[in-house]
Structures are given as C-alpha cells and as structure tokens.
Image 1: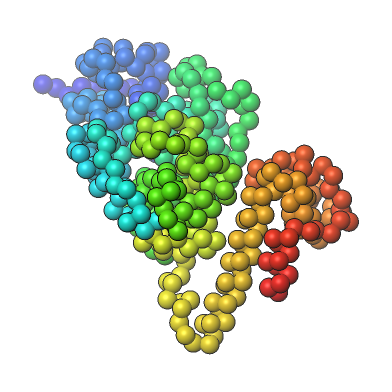
Image 2: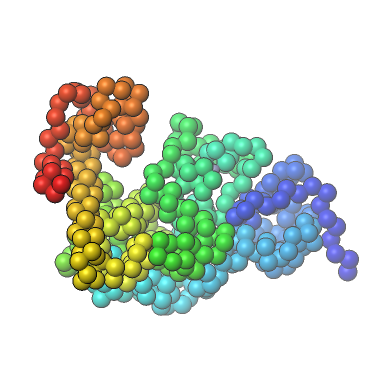
Length: 406
Ligand SMILES: [Zn+2]
C-alpha cells in the first residue's frame, strides 16, 4: 500500500501544542471541521481523547501526511508524557495516588499525611475538560495554538507572555468568547510566573533548574503534585506543622484548603478551587525560596540556594553570617505578615504604603506605580485613598522587626 500523500498545507505544530489544537488549525486551512478531516481524509471516526491517547494508526497517517515523526506527534498528547508526567494512563492501579504524591514531602513530614487510596485516579487528568488559554497568544492570528499544558490543571499563566490564562468557549480561530468580559490580559504575579516557567521548562526540556540543583521533569511534576496535596491536608491532622500550611494560605489571602472541608483529589476539585490551590503552591515555593518559612519536608531543601550546612557551621564568621540571615528572615516574615494584614486592615495598608513610599513621597508617578503594585498584591486601593505623604509609618509589626533589629 502506498503511503498517504503529504498535505500541501499544514502549519507547523507550536512547541507544546495539543494534538487537537494542531488538527484544528490544519482543518481550518481547508475550511473543514476536525471531525470531517478525521473521517474523510485520515480514515478515522470520531476520536474523543485526541489529547490523551490518540490511536497509533492515526499518528502513523498524520506522520505520513505531515512528514513529522510519530514520536513528536505522540508528545502532543498526554500518552507521550508517560512516565514523566504520570506513571500510567491505566486508571485501575489502586495505589497510583500513593505512589505519585505520597513519596515526597515539602511542607509536612511524610508521617503527618494520611495516605489516600482513590479508585480510578490518574495524575493531572481533570474530571472535566479545561478550556483556558492566553488571550495574547489567541489574539495573534499566526499562533492561535492551545498548549497541552493548558488542558491540564498544571499552569496558571502563559509561559510566553506571563499573563493569566483565561477561560473561553468556542474554537480558537473560528469563534471564541472569553468568560471574563474584559479582554485586557492580566499580568500574573512573580510567584506564579516563576512556578509556571519551571513547569514549562520541564515540559520543553525534560529538566527543571532549581536553586540547589537541576532536577528531572518527572521529579518536578511529582513535587508539585505533592505540594498541592499537602496544601489540601486538614490542619487538624498536621499537629505542630499546621502553621506552615496556614502561613501559605494567609499569604495568598484565601481560606485554608481554598475553603474545602471534604478531601477530594486535586484533579476532581472544582476548577476555581484548583486555581487557588495552584496559586497557593506557587506562594509556598516563593516563601520557601525566600526562607520566610523553612518547612520540614525532605524536598523543601531543593528550593534553598545553598546547602543548609553552611548556616549551622560553628565558625565565628559563619555565625555572623547566620545571624544576619536570621535578621533578614525576620524582616521578610514581618513584611509578609504586614502585607497579609494590609489586605483587610486599612491602617496597616497605609503604614505599609508609607514605608514603601519612603524616598519617593513627592513623586506622583512613582507613587502611582507603587499603588499598582499594592493592588496586584491584593491590597484594596481604597485603603490608600487618605495617604498623607508626611505621615510617619506606624505599622507595629514592621517597626518591631526593622527597628529593634537594626
Ligand atoms: Zn501567551
């Protein structure tokens, strides 16, 4: 049998693009629907799980039509990511969750987590399809691709533009409606973009650079999933370590466990809850990296920039170094506490703003930029409406931390 002829037109897949998205763009070149392209050109009936496990026979004919290797086409679906992103596509493995998310620990010692057994569980595969995308990517007629990572509850922002992924209805390139009526892209915070950059690095290069060392992408996805489960642990079972979980949720401005009372695996949570969980994971990583919290989990150390032994050596110079680090840790802790408090306390908000505005109190442009930063941190701008540039700052937590120490 002769191999199928090449398509005269076929856009190149974008890095990380989902198979369904690429087929959609090819079908659009011929003014066809994907189902017609599958049926009449590729000899396949409706394929429901194009982005999870496309049939090998389909990949073979797609390879003949496009000249792209089968392996590369397979990586446009989740099947191409076994065993990195998930151990198996088989959902009948009873200890799958335990194996994936309970071998590692970041925020809690492993003994503090109750091992859960869930029937029919697969890592990262949502119970309902996810339709979220970057507004800037989809507004660019040359690159209207949906990434595979966006179809999984893995990322909150676009790895290229750093803006929040937004929910949409429809088919990109044909008809599309954004859930959020305001079409202007929202910039994601630094903690979120840093986490997503790592996830993207894992998906595109197979490894992730962490402060301590480079790790395999498979380990990154498991650490991230572990962290998400730790953040969903009932505080009553965390003993003295509950403070770490509480601290992370307070820093995000959300209730612990994003308000959940019953435990369910991350993949089956309500999409809005999952977004808060991912945001909390990003915040936890930032707090660990900046040493605001030093949780007991074994993998937490991967986020430290230097080996811990550097700080506990008994030499006098090292002791001095440790003391200065402790002072800064205290200061950072106090600032983070003040930011969390400023989200609902106007007095703290004004004091914090006065402190941050120090040195640029009579520069309206600079103050405006600062207001924008505060707003991004979740501090209501109405709290700053009575800001007096000559008022001294009086945030007790900050005064104690900064002035007693220096
Ligand atoms: Zn984008």
